[in-house]
Length: 162
Image 1 (cartoon, rainbow, N blue to C red):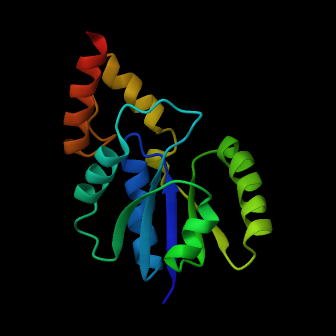
Image 2 (cartoon, rainbow, N blue to C red):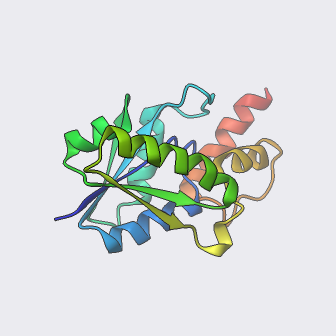
């Protein structure tokens, strides 16, 4: 059985993230979506809100589970018995950063492989930051995030505009 960890902040989850999760669920026996904090970011949603949104969006995927974690990714992967870190890539700029992270993870945990999965073309431009900006400016979120996420984004954006 091959278990993969798909880590991220997911603030919020987008259709691009879901694309990688669904494709990963076809490749691996189990995928753990690992929701973490990122000290370099100021999230709109709590970790608990993000976990709940992702769980709702992934209900149709029986081999996907969602967990919050803090600390080193390779330590979390080891604790979960995962042998693969799954990373989605959108553009060359993603690759530069992710390549460095993969190399460091390989140094820390040589038994864990990193697999890069290119996002599907319709989502190549999509990021959580862009989605939040669109929500803040009261733009159309259809096709960018699942409907339940769009509702929560609109609510958070309205709170921020006050």
